[in-house]
Length: 120
Image: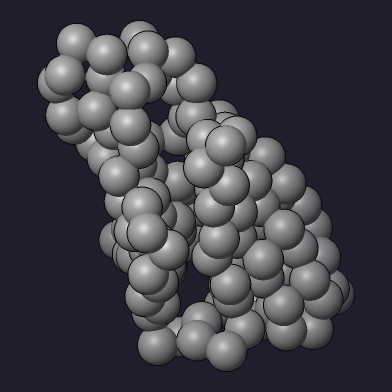
């Protein structure tokens, strides 16, 4: 069984910074691509950033230059450093990962989400 657990969500003022973490655990053989998505109230879930197993990154236009995705493969952990936060960044942030288990099956997994609220 594989689990993804996010942490780091909080209430922050506009212009502030926050760092999210997502730790993967369980019957993991290899983690391929990992990513952060977010869902604001009344809106569809959207991709924020993605990082390959080799470190190649891609970002949504709305967060380019403000957010940085990274990963520590030795810890099976994904990060999202967010700066210059805006009210429109308010959402539940979810991590996901494409994981190969010890049984050699490959599928996507999602975390439970962490709330980020940007407000004065």
